[in-house]
Amino acid sequence: MEKFETFTGIVCAVDRANIDTDALIPKEHLKSIKRTGFGPALFSDWRYTDDGSDNAGFVLNQPKTQGASILVGRNNFGCGSSREHAVWAVAQQGFKVVIAPIEGDIPGFADIFRNNCAKNGVLTVQLSSADVDKIFQMAASDEPLEATVNLEEQKVVFGDTEFVFEVEPAVKEKLLQGLDDIAESLLYEADITRFESGHRTQMTGA
Image (cartoon, rainbow, N blue to C red):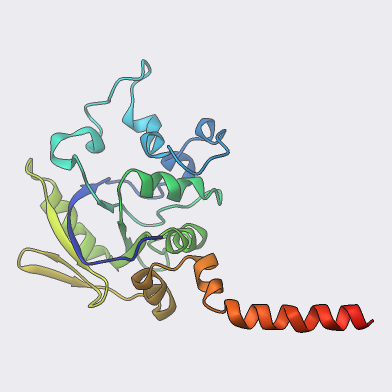
């Protein structure tokens, strides 16, 4: 996967809590055996009308969110089934970051969704409810809202407003280096080859 680099992007703020993976990509889109082409299926039940045309009332179809790369939701984002297709749809729509609030004992993200994001190059950012409320207030304008995301410094900047976030060091390093699980394993290819060579010798001798 690509290295995560500091970027400035447009925000798409979906003001709903408990957005589950079926809302992110309904089950009828899970028929493909390929890992491509899921972007148009993101939020399809909300994004399109019954005749397949764009739902003008849904925020992702509004002019101010065209080309958005920062997705903002409410708490417990990505709950529901463990389908990795949900993250593929988010990433293939062009989103590099998903922001959600921690609210009491309710996390910003479901654990499996958050882990799948890290494995697919998508950064999940948990902020306080108050901070996310501020983002939604800024996003309410008819004009596009831009933010700069700096993973190295762990901050999201909206003009003069800056939000600092926490991230697991291992996840941060993998995103910055662009390492998925396979690429990370290949860093130890020499050690793996050496182990396998010795293992084969032992098996042959037996």
